[in-house]
Length: 100
Image 1 (tube, rainbow, N blue to C red):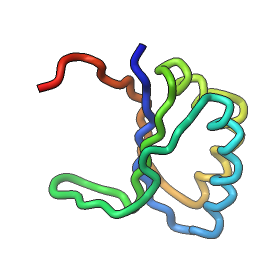
Image 2: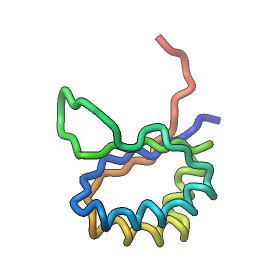
Image 3: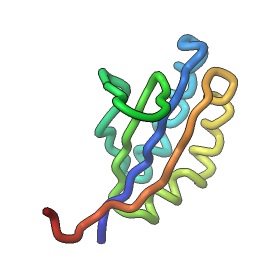
């Protein structure tokens, strides 16, 4: 079964306020086996639009990634994020097929 990922692109306009979200999301991420692969950091956007912050979170399965987003724990964390940021979020299944 392929792993799955949350891909988030976020503009944080109040870093101090955003810290509450970072604390609030921890319970959901732990419960659903989340692992941060990218959490901010340096980036280069050679084409297209971008946001200030990029995050990739790995989950053991698509169902775990989906369930985490819709869990009561994560839904409770969302109001701690939205007043302080704007973003784009994807839940996407990984690829396990042939490689070039």
